[in-house]
Image (cartoon, rainbow, N blue to C red; front, top):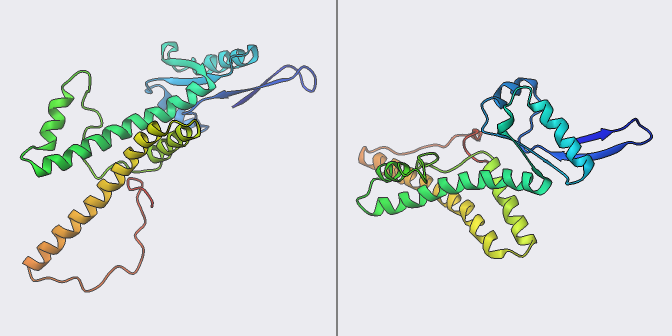
Length: 210
């Protein structure tokens, strides 16, 4: 978001602010009231701090001040990427544990419930599933990987990339298990698949497009 101060064309100063979760749609205003926080990033300059103050005053009309967080530009950008990366990491972590549970006598739902009662962990995003879908999690993690590689942090890049790899592996594993169960049931009932759909099934929002 660019803000200008002064009377153009003279004494006009342009500055940049970053609002990672900004949405221009007016109908989204109500959703800000239930968000955990509004994050606003700006430059550490007089004009940058003035721009932050202007935006804070705008959001303060419907968001409590204590939920408005101000940072510099890099912190605001990384905060958005890291938030989604951490959530995706939890999904991949419980899915990795689900594989171990399948090889033992453990129940992944019981394990998730037990560790979710730990106040340090909480039960959010601890449901074993096909994996995270959509585009935001994958896109933000890969952006994080790119930044780590750009700055020579290859171990950190490999760590976050493994979250995406684990998610892809879980999706492939789900499909293979589903197909195996389907054909096992078909053979048991003397059924055969004689045709395939002629039209491509459109991916839903919950399943990541490949």
